[in-house]
Amino acid sequence: MQNNSFQDRILGILKDRKIGVRVYLVNGVHVDEIVKAFDQYAVLIDDGKQQSIIYKHAISTITPSTPLPASPDSIQPDTDKA
Image (cartoon, rainbow, N blue to C red; front, side):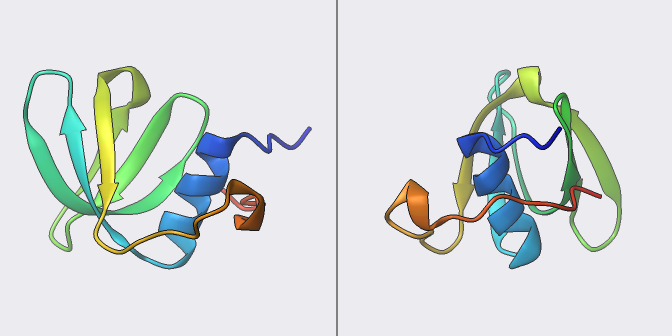
C-alpha cells in the first residue's frame, strides 16, 4: 500500500530533486544535508562525506534551500523511497 501523505510527497521532492536541506533537531542542533531516502520512521541524509540516519521523532524542522511548489496538490507522491 502506497502512502501519499503530504510529508512523503515533500520528502520525495527533496530527494528526487537533490535539494539541500537544513534539518533542525529537537535538541537545537542543525545539519545541512541532502535527503537520500526515507521511510515511515527515519530519514537518511548525506553531506557528501558521510551518511546519517535521523529518526523522524528527533526532527523539529526541515528547511529546503530552494522553494518548493506552492500547492500541495502539485507535489507528486514519491513512489521509490529507497
